[in-house]
View (cartoon, rainbow, N blue to C red):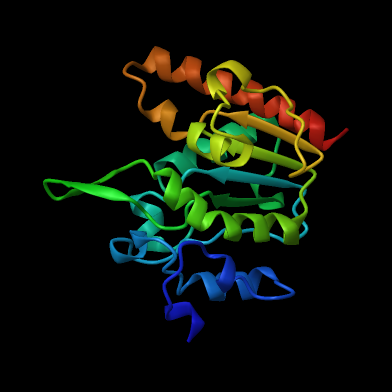
Length: 212
């Protein structure tokens, strides 16, 4: 089957006239990069095809890899809380990642996140492009530097351009902010609270764009 062949990019695996179920089924057998060898399974996007907003993270984490669903681990809980604080219903959103397999390094018995490289992001990009083509969101939100650079170019800096709408052909409105996991990495409760408030501030910009 075509899904079992090896390619440098997932493009040959994307079905013609794709729907989200067709894309999810095709992506399940993707071997366009080597991450399928260590990931438990492909973690495809999740949500309604009529979603007005799409959130794109970097890659699934440990919990997502095991569950086969995006943003269901600790970072997903932070995202849920931030969306609620910003007045955005996650049920109305589509959530996905720039890379669909979990890239990790062993540390004792734990699997520690490892940043995807550009070749892996490029190999997986056709899945993301196909998701966006099907959903056609009004607002596209990149969560974190890796997702933002995958979507908007390697020169993009979230630290300088977060929370500001960016011109792009990908959607009528495109905004980047930090990845929710960055909140969890803050060292003190005060730092976590401040970082969370900044994420909510960015998401309130997104909420205004949704109602524009």
